[in-house]
Length: 232
Image 1 (cartoon, rainbow, N blue to C red):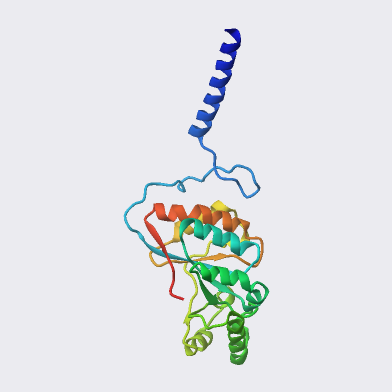
Image 2: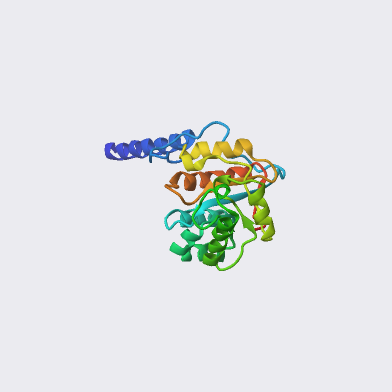
């Protein structure tokens, strides 16, 4: 009997520990691998009425490490995005770009090697755009000048090519690695109907962007936001 009572007490202790952990809740892993508490205001709620449509865009890829991770998150939630890629990146990792397209994502022109277009001649701007498209194999509908560096001259060149000049309306500065929750909170604080969200899948360590994306999509949906695919 003493042995049985001891076994029952041990089992009860384990059960209470599990229940307590479930009630308290544990946040997602932090950027350093430790558990991180969820900031106030970022909890998931029941979906509300339709609150608009936003669009995800990713710059500076393709990247052999981070682009497939971004794609995995998008596929997890059934979301598609526009990837503004450099021709140089496409020439390095053509299979990554092909995989993006095979799952219904769209590719935009982000030049050949990411220069500031406003510092180039008209001929050099055209060369940058044409060489990217040569690597891609076709002319995409949308062009995003690297770094958002643009002016009326650049816009006119793009328009003359029959393409759309696309920037963004929400920039959480994920490239600066401020923390995954910070990226999420910056987006949620600024999205409106029609917002174009700027994120990055290339140009550096994008582990925080990948983690943030996994947190962001369900929270946008919980607010009644639809994630659409921009026409590019």
